[in-house]
Structure formats: C-alpha cells, structure tokens
Image 1 (cartoon, protein in one colour):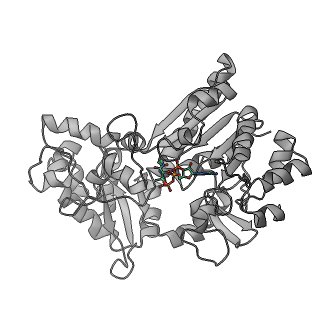
Image 2 (cartoon, rainbow, N blue to C red; image 1 turned 120 degrees about the vertical axis):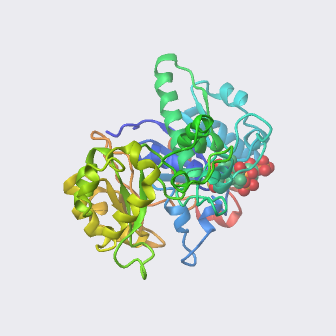
Image 3 (spheres, rainbow, N blue to C red; image 1 turned 180 degrees about the vertical axis):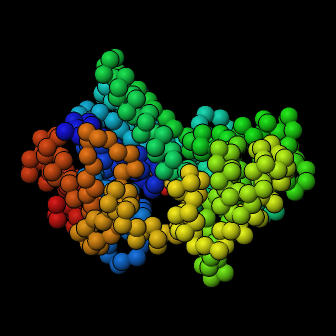
Length: 424
Ligand code: CAO
C-alpha cells in the first residue's frame, strides 16, 4: 500500500502553490480530486502554452496523479455536489484569493457543520494583519518574505530566485501541516484548519538572514566579502552575492571555458576541516602553517585572496574535473549545472528525480519526481488529468450518481456549458 492510501483530498487549488502540495499528497497515495471551473479549469492549463491544443507544461508538471472534476460551485447543483464531496472527503485544500471560499458559501463554520472530521488547508499570501486580504504571487512572496532584499549583489537591485520558494515552498509547508493534522485526527477524531502564508514560508526558508540581522548588532558579518573588502555595513543585512551563508566560506568560481559557457563555474567551499588539503591541491602548501591563513579566523579578512588563489586553480579545469579532483579529498564543491545538463543527467533519471511521462495530448515530457523517498511507499508518476476527465467517474463512485442524475446535473449547468456536458 501507499502511505496515504484511503485519504481523499478535495483539491480546490490552482496555479502553483496549492497544486504542489496536493501533488505531493497524491504521490504518497492520497486520492486527489481536483475541482475545476467548467470549460477552462485551472488557469495554468492555458498559460505558457507551447503545443496548440494541449495542456501547458506549467499545468501538467504540477498536477500529476490527480483526478479532474469539472464543477461550477456557484450553481445550486454545483454547491450540492461540493457539499456531498465534503461529506466523504478527509481534506479540502484551497489557495483562492482571501475570502473566495466564504463568498462561495463554504466558510470554515459551514464546512465543519458538513463534516467535522474534514481538514481545511489553505494557502494565502499573508497571515493575519494589514495585508491579509491581498492577492500574492511567487515573486511578491519572495519580496515580502526577506528573500529578495538578501539575494543578488550589493551593488545591484534586489533579486528573486529561480527556485519557487514562495509557491512550491509554501506548498511543502502546507503538505506537512495536512499530514500532521491527519495524524492528530487519528487521536481526536476532529478536523482542523491548517493555514500557511507565503510570506511566512519564505521567511522560514530565509531564517539565516534573520540570524544575520541580529548578529549585525554585535559587529560586521565577517564571512561576507563586503567585510574582506573593508566596506561598512548598514543597518540591514546586505545582499551577499554568492558568499556562503554559513561558517564555512564559499564562492562561485570560474572554471575552464567560462568565457563562452555561462555555466562553466563551480561552487567551492573552504571547509575548515579540509583546509590543508585545499592548500596542497591549489599549490599553496605554505598556507597550511602561515599564521595569516592557517585558521578560519585568520582567513576571514583575507577571503578575497584565498578565493583568487583557488580560482586560479579551478580555471585550469572544467567544472566536472574540479568535482572529480575535490570529491576524493572531501572538499565540498558543486558544478553550476544548466537546466539542459540536468534534463540530460542519466543518474537523475535513474534515481527518479527526473521522470518522463506520456501525456494523452502532449506526448512524452519531462517532469520532476517526488523529491522525498519513502522506502515503504513507492511513487509512480502518472500524467496530469485532462479537464473534467473524471467528472462522471468521481460523482458515481463517491456520491452514487447514476446516468440520469448526471444528465440532470449537466442540464442544470453545474458541469459547464451543454457542449461539454453532452461529451461526459
Ligand atoms: N466554480 C465556480 N467558481 C470558481 C471555481 C469553480 N470551480 N473555481 C474558482 N472559482 C472562483 C472563485 O470562487 C473566485 O470567485 P470570487 O472572486 O467571486 O470569489 C474566482 O474564481 C477567482 O478566484 P481567485 O480570486 O482565487 O483567482 P485570481 O485569478 O483572481 O487570483 C491568485 C489568483 C493566485 C492571485 C489568488 O488566488 C491568491 O492570492 N491566492 C492565494 C495565494 C496563492 O496561492 N498564490 C500563489 C499563486 S501561484 O504564484
């Protein structure tokens, strides 16, 4: 069996943050039923489309292993179906704009009245406070959660990250909240409301910068290259380029071919434990004993000199040769991998980090596999559903609808325009 087998999830999510959460639950074996607006569905189905007539990769890569039901929950029939589904499901996940679920007539109180065991899980941009009613997208979350002000170079503007820490990051947080609430329900029998705010999720991932903010009160941040360059610190944590955030200083360094290849770089960490080996490797054996370089404390004001010397060595090798030379010596390095290199990486495919799936209208495409491996709950990634592909099946299976009931519901407009209803 799968870890979450038997758990039924009403997936009222859209765009990225919510769908990443419910996809994780689906990968762990939950029956995830995506409720979508008839005719259009999740807006991402049509966004960034690359193949005419096919659901976009934006949608397909976020909605694997789910079933899709078309339902207009603002019609009387749609509300009746939603009520029935709430009765028989364990979790309802949503990431609508603040208040949308209430406006639909399904406040937390109403939901509890229908099914007190149900867990209602919500993602919003902000938690309670002055911005609680605001809509939020990924980059807004990165800006208000402290990521943008601390990312980039100090002489450049605030920068957002390619990693979707606001959306996918908050989806991960919410998934943990849901399984925790399910665990508690095992003992209490009661559902509860689980909320995750994107601002809080980003801040949680940025806590080292809140740490540095407080350290600033007691002096400069000596591992930041700004310190080595003798530049003063202001009152807020500055952007630190590619300086490592931890006590083991690191930088991105050029490797052979950097003039033509934008990713011919390596990350290099001068871990204290392997400092003598680094010195030998880069041809500076004297630094092992030299009091100016022998200890981490002594090196801090000289990090630019240290990394210039290491870079003179890394530039003689490709990023992969640097990895091969450093790994056996226990020196932590990592090549800057392009997305093309990642897509082509055989070992990532073998480990299941990258998976190829066959989608009914777009054909084969790559997607990410479940990044969390459970030894007793294997994950098989299946294609994202076509819009409404499971409407009849789910209503029959969970609510006992027969052909006539479905016909009536379709005629009422709850399943969308008649053209689509007839095709059901
Ligand atoms: N049947 C009937 N109505 C439906 C429906 C269905 N199946 N599914 C959705 N709707 C309705 C909603 O009820 C809502 O109606 P009202 O405005 O009348 O309440 C409407 O569709 C639009 O929902 P929305 O406001 O959530 O969508 P939006 O495109 O305007 O905003 C977003 C999108 C993401 C900014 C907003 O949902 C949001 O802030 N969500 C919370 C934060 C979040 O998750 N952001 C991450 C997004 S990924 O970067």
